[in-house]
Length: 498
Image (cartoon, rainbow, N blue to C red; front, side, top):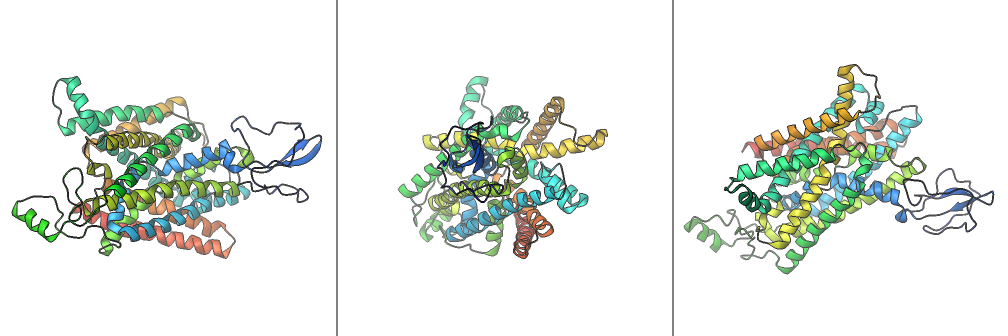
């Protein structure tokens, strides 16, 4: 906070963050139309003399707009699968894995914009999207491959969000649908109706032209996820999972004794999962560890939107140094929400922790129902955020097919038609394909997440940076992303096949 811009004259004295050194009336206003305060120290005119004024980064609206928009790109349905990821990796293993991947995610997010800045200095234009940065840094073939992954990631993430909306809203709205239609709908019919209604809302949100227009919904999404975290932590403290006493609200037992296993077999019950594992500190085998990797990686993805968020920041504050603060704050918010969710969810329900943690709660639980509503709100806010980079790629394909000049601005007709077509395609897939939330996020996180979060920023750092240390860290990111993609995809596909 309050780091001086590089163009400040060295003769000007430093000032502490959040304190102004110039008290004289200013000749020109320093507040831009799209921000209430400035992000950094800016040279201002006071009585005809240059005089610095220091405004804290933490008090700046433009800074928090960028932070919350970036954080919202990561938040959403992925938080519900974090307790399941910790179930696979163990309490200590999951915590260490999240800490490591969050740190690497911050580094790769910073590297992405640093590479963009270096490429812009070398004369490359049109770097407002993730794929455009890759095209400038790695060439057209690599950019085309990455754009395919980004499009698949956007489609898969929106698929997951629509499935999540059906998961959390069906228990709440099914009685209302039955009363309105004067008939009892099957679970499949109720889910289809709810997903169709949510698709309409998502399509309307996808009509927004700029990603910064989602800044208010971004703050709402963070608050919605925060409520879920508070509820889970409160429940895990009040009634933690213990040996022989770890039942969830649906009757599943998360830490069975041998006597309970015998009773389960004798009475043909399905309370236990057939083991006495309960809550473990470390993963039971390597396959469980590999299964947790893509789940944790998926929920850290905000890199695809990062280039767009950076491009829409006010020009006076659009610097890599400011972006590093944005990236750190966004990842810190996400980390502080994900860590207690994973720990508390697994500590509450043990080995019976589900891929969607809310399915462990009864629909008659008022707090859980409120949490369902909050998560539905977060998913509705996250859907257009994940769709946005996909729309950029689809528009580029449209310009190529229609032989229109490159860089042509999106027309409102294109935005409307593309939003309808994209949302209807996601709805069709959600209705016809599988609806396991954790399986969707595992597959999408493995195939696309490891690549776009770690590998691609690592390659960009290796190709554009001059520092040997930066290139070395870039190589580490490349290897981590490749490992997640290969190991996570293999384990997930084997699990889905079984």
